[in-house]
Length: 301
Ligand code: SF4
Image 1 (spheres, helix red, strand yellow):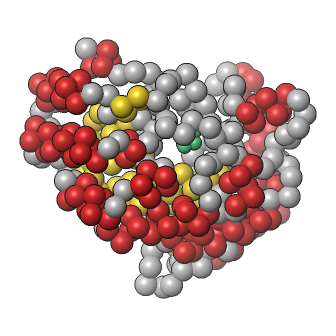
Image 2 (cartoon, protein in one colour):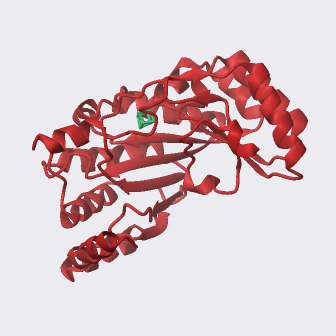
């Protein structure tokens, strides 16, 4: 059974819904971000090649055709380059039809690899990398224990883009709760303008059980931001995203956590996105949406 091969919980980006997931590592090598509980119960492990090989063989025996493969878990790029290359070569041998291989990568794992190593990985079919920026503000990054500075994240992102990887970046609104988030919003917009990722997603903080933020909430040390505060924060981020007309960022803020669905491309849709936010705030849409959400979530919809 395919399900027996996976070590749960298993996460993948929404855009990998139709991809074959091959779990080449378990957990996250950092596992210390204050808002994240994804891999709390997993010890970070690099799976031995023979195990991954037998799983690839099994998948091939079950799947006639696959276009996309996602390499899980949280930071597959941290694996030693020789080991990753061995796996990628075997994937290419067994799935010659695959058009895209992607993975999550932390800034640290990118910076630990040389450009030559990353080029080899790119040439073996890894074309899309997902990286959590969370914030472009160093104080905020320190507060959430991201384990990297804005400068390191920027360097890692630009390194990947130079080599020819597509880059998908996520940031988190509401990560500071109801505290002043001006620097988080402004500096995140500025870092996005430097990186110019191919894809940008803005998520809203969800307080997950057993995270440090959850513990802070219970002690009264962290108070979640209101919907309107979060929208003001997203507005400030967007106002600070300035990229040349010949560049493009595909932007989505339509995750289940978001108060308002936003979708467009930078730079051309920037003004329209800001108009959408202003309209929602001035028409009390966010508060009403939040009340509806709470009402239906209590009913267990
Ligand atoms: S947010 Fe990413 S880097 Fe941070 S603990 Fe979770 S999986 Fe690891």
